[in-house]
Figure (tube, rainbow, N blue to C red):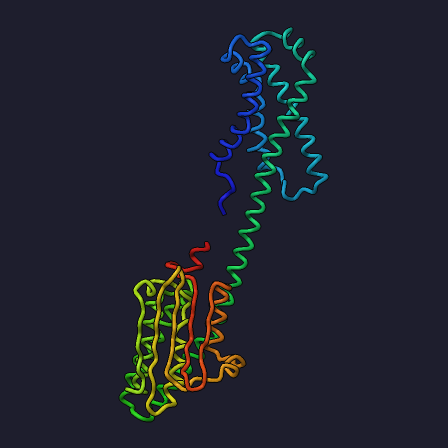
Length: 362
């Protein structure tokens, strides 16, 4: 995970925190002793430069060495008090050496005797400024790392749930496909051979999807799987199976969990088309509106009692609904509209995304 601040950002933040102090000290120097603004600025820089340098060392060295995150509050306060003492002593020493190098030892002694309380006070103030900024950045980094860990844990949970749900769905789907081929084998061995070839293509597509880096596909790829499945069912049902597709181009580019459409197509064929002598028509529509992908599958079959449907937990619909919720939460829905004698219509609605959700989150 990226740090809260890059090195360049940390340096800019550190220097920016000194700007108000430089301005305040420059004005104070100009008002008290300096002959001009440039001289006041030079006095200020010479006065604060040791504090800036020692603060940088404290931030980038001690900040990385000490185990701040494992310290309890008493230990943290004790370490900070010790650091404040060392910082103040170090700043006073460095500043004294600078005066000694330019004005001699007598001036140093006179300055320290007259200004020692102020040196200590300013040293503690400067250190307090460093510590406040450092711990604010550190705590923000801890919070960000915890949030990233929570998000990663949730993503892993969702992937595990999606994998389990898909594992529940695939055997059901493959068993039904084999059952259709077995029924065809008794009626027409030649067409059953064609169905086996279609089934091998279908199986390759399923296995390729399982080996992929994500559990999501574009609607265009999902419809290729659906067409392979429909090819098998057409060999069995012939003209009794009629399919009409109306899919907008922008809808085909959207991503959704794999096996979101095929189980609904399978349900329609099993319950509304195959049992009827004249078969039936399945209509698949897809469109994008207001940032949402909508998929609607409807048949002209006998329909069902909504109360019975509400109590039934068929594998196809139930697993599809749970997978949508696992991926998109309340932003996705699967609704059913049916009544006796009115056919069966299933509508999926989910955010229209043009890349896998799992990739967008990482």
